[in-house]
Image 1 (cartoon, one colour):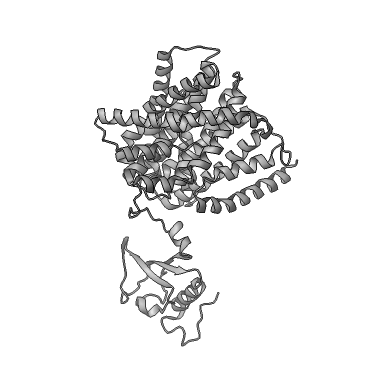
Image 2 (spheres, one colour; image 1 turned 120 degrees about the vertical axis):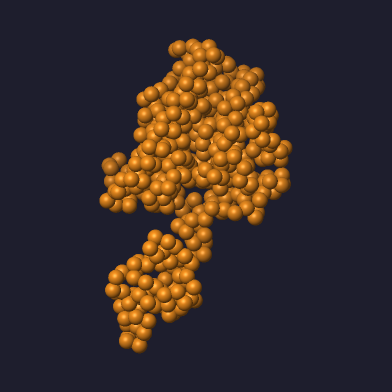
Length: 501
């Protein structure tokens, strides 16, 4: 196919995927299943697009995961997750180790596979998925500590699992002892953390002091810094994923220029990465091979969800109590166990042994694919019910609000920013004299670098910035009225001025 055809096909897939995101959002179903379905539909068993390159899939997948983790860090509120970080770190280290051991020991016996293959399967399934967790849990009214544990865990646990699966995938060529394995994992995590903690503050300092010529360059610079962190850590033989998450977490919680635009850009990039990643993984899968993977996949998935994950949460909670990091109630433990969502990350990790030529790795990929589909369908939509059943739901909990996102969209409203130029006849007009329609109101005035909520008698001055909320229905009428008053003053209507372009 020509480049033009690929562009047409890619654009159509992205548009269709965006449309289905709305359906997934309403049902509480992670959108990854929709995107995987697109990939399967386009693959050899559907429209016949061939794709059977695990090496390329691995590189694309790891890059896409870096973008998704960067967005997760940039949009995470540190003040909300700070108290949860110690418990999340325990889950991402000791919890991951427990999950790997339990899954490996049980599936080795039940499925009759060798120990190395069982360990690889355990590692691949150990990591919760950041994209799935962010998309589902950020819509649930959970207490900040519980939501923070799940969010931070999904950001931290990718690093040790990626390191472990890479080391295990090369174990047949260079066998390592348990001590060497743990030492190498610890060294990579330390290097990754050091890189992230160095580049994050340095990048924030530089962006606050460099006046870029266009506001659109700031979001690009922020995302580029996360990739510098990722690449730098990898070159130093450290964990790129831990580096990129920490860098993004620091940048996202620093006072940077155009923070709202940066968050919006990162969210858009992450959505594009998710769509491309899941569609590619769907293309890579072979539906005709899936029937043989159903039974072992369901067995391994059941072991993970019903045994390994609850045990990892229990052990992590006991360890946190011993370390005096706080007591986790049994209700929170039960919800943490059920909310350990798996998504694209296990499937991407399964491409690593496949690309390395590990025996039985294609079967691991197929089994993980089955596990992700079945248990995402089972767990994702039931999380709100589980939260209510366990009594961990917090309907009155305040949510972060952004005027650029959901609240204004749901109200079918727009936020307008008006700067009053020198010479404008808006100068001296009181707010009530604007005579705006009932669906609009001036909500904030920024004057001389200070903001305040105006009264109806507040006089507008030249160089003021007005923030005005209006329903979409009357937006045009509001804009015409403001232009009219700016040109002819508060009596613009008497002069026949209608504010038309």
